[in-house]
Length: 343
Image (spheres, rainbow, N blue to C red):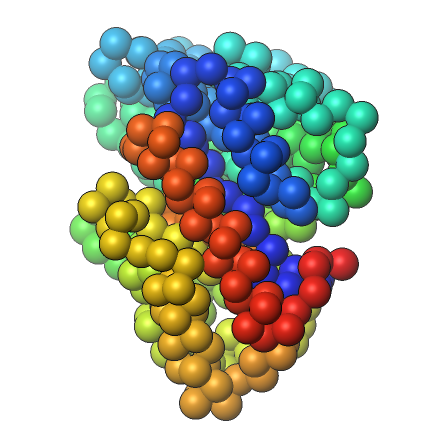
């Protein structure tokens, strides 16, 4: 995929008006827009709540901001009937939890984009945020853990199908912040399970399949999954990714792509950065990879530029400032390296 450092975003925005959120995105992201999660509207727009809505027996407690299931009482029959019959409509996203998705589909109706990005919570992160009747994460229950993964797989298939209303190239990211916990006491999940579970969720999804992790993790492990695109917080962690030039090179040479989270989403950092400082930072990353023997033409061709992570924690003017920096930096990178638009 020839991205040539096209711009897109990660997930959340701070708006309470879905149409205004989408209008802002469409005004800034001409090549690869995305649908925004809008947590300011309530816990129902939290990414863990959003992708729990179709789980059997689940209870989403908006007041306590907690997702629960009694593992002694739920009935999985209807759920598995829908899975076995590939009834993706059973896993459609409820409008009351996905205001940003439906606002994008409405605002952009009749338009076609080079690509459109969506997102689904990853299986490790989702599984650690659904709790059983004893307060234990449901990821550790073999039967319900499988249900969580099947649910995410079917929701990803439905979403990819829906985004085809706007593009021939939908992108589905798995948002996996909890991969930073692998190998710690906070996530008793083996590396083998991580790879198998991510691949299980991505299986059969007709889209460009990405994974976003906004912290440091085992990058070769992530690259061993079936993803097409690795998205990471380059502002803080580009040096950790650069420790694996052979693995990254093999990933790119096999058709993979990188999403560089170059633009800060931290309130205190945004005023300190300009297009010039961010271009300089990106040039430093490219020099770092070049010194390690990587093919920079291939890196640039196969790269997207994004904010570090979602923008839901900012106010609206600061979120728009991030998008302005994103657009300006992409223009500067393309001018510096003589890149065209994506194709």
